[in-house]
Amino acid sequence: MTELLTAAQMRQIEQAAIDSGAVTGLELMERAGAGVVEAVFEEWPDLGQGAHRAVVLCGPGNNGGDGFVVARLLHERGWDVEVFFFGQSESLSPDARAMHDRWTATGEILPMEPGQAGQGPRPVLLVDAMFGTGLTRPIPLICAQAFQAVTQRKRVSGTTQRACHVVAVDAPSGMDMDSGEVLYPNFQDEVGSETFLQREVYPRNLTCGLCVTFHRAKRGHYLAKTGRRAPVVVDIGLPEGPSSGNAAFLAGALDDPARIRLIDPEPGRTRKLWLRHVAHLGAGGHKYDRGHTLILGGGVGRGGAARMAARAALRVGAGLVTLAVPPAAVQENAAQLNAIMLRPVGGADELRAMLEDTRLSCVVLGPGLGVGAKTRELVLAALNSVNRRVVLDADALSSFADDPEPLFEALGPSAVLTPHEGEFARLFPDLSESARHSSLAAPPMSRIDAAQAAAARCGATVLLKGPATVIASPDGTTGLHPALYHRAAPWLGTAGAGDVLAGMIGGLLAHPMAEFGVHKAVEAAAWLHVEAARSFGPGLIAEDLPEELPKVFRALGL
Image 1 (cartoon, rainbow, N blue to C red):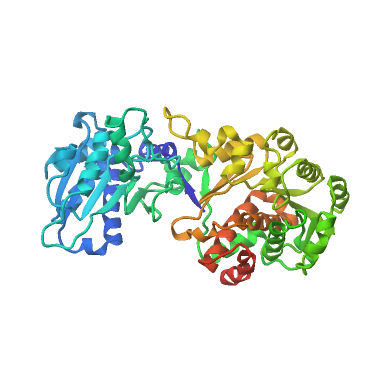
Image 2: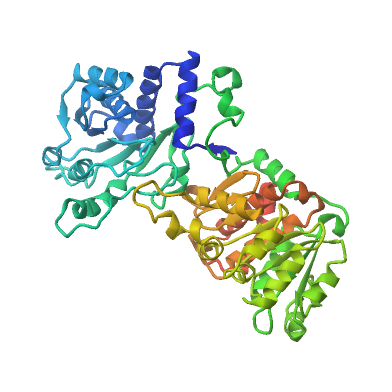
């Protein structure tokens, strides 16, 4: 699994390597600039043929130093390069100043003035090297305006060029690389004021066709709500092993929160072995060896969600699945179920009696269950049963919106919560999306931070749904599964898809060995959920997801 870094972690890795003598800052900067140029030519091969025109926007930090390297390397290939600089050369770091001086020995540096940046013919390449991963405040208005001015230049007469390609160095300027959020100023002033103009300019500043980052992708690259493709990660020669000077990082001895893994295993044998190990897929034996999942369903006319969850649990690998519904709903469900067993359950007392059967290894509550006191009683009965994995979704979560403390007190490390943003806000209002963006004085809390805080508070694994789904456990283990870039599946936004995911988690957790890897099983379910959607394609409805799993398993060689 790929590890995603915070800005602070990246700084520590670089500094550890430099302090150890394994590499110098100048070497890292030179490799970074060369990596950007190589990535540009790989992305747009026509730019590698002949000489072209480029504009490079350099900022006051090491990101700007990388930009000076890019400018020099393009110039050496015969390109016509304009460099605009925001800042004072005497304030640059020694490494960035050295790259600044190397460029000035070759070409001119122009001040970052929007009027001047908008002059001249349109370049084929715009390099955004203004502000990188360490940004914690909105970028200056003059920088955003200069960026916009370059993109609006008139094309060269007699050519068919429509727009310039934009490459961001390390990060699109203006984005917090820990949270993925755009850092906007406070827009309280009147129309026509400087801050109003900033609001008009800032969104355009995020546009880039390619983002090139170094050593590892950063969290913000996968938490951002913009971007059409994953960042290109360039190896700049930072050592990997404990003897390299990175021992503190590799041992996890950082001040930052738990290290974050990107849940996207490599194709082929690696992916197959991962699923066999964490999800126990492909195991034979008796049906009870694969576990028994119990799904609690709703009343008359409300059984569809629970039936989809039950079907998903069975398809993903549970040996047996039972659907328990109110007595009045038994006949309705019996007409639509075959391999899934059916039991009447009128309330919490009957559920407790059913859970005396120790072969029932996992319980899923929430899909279509209804919001209210009865659901609360059922949830607490399941959580208070002995040695049981419990998955709580939808109504099982919303039923505790007014008073979540009884739920938190009953939860434990074998329980899983699967809220979408709205359900998350009901249980953790201080960690919700609106709360995360309430302060303009500081960078916003990320989805990762929020999920980690929620897991620590409630003592259970929390799967916070979204295009970038976060899975956080109370011990600090955290994974990020983005349905973005090469794994985008927008058709997954359909009614019932979350119910299917809850069932898939319940099916994987039913396996007797799942108690040793609740977090890993949840990560596997999130990955399979998206993989099934991608396998089916557009036109997907929730009922299709469980039926697509056999095709996914065959493709994996399971």
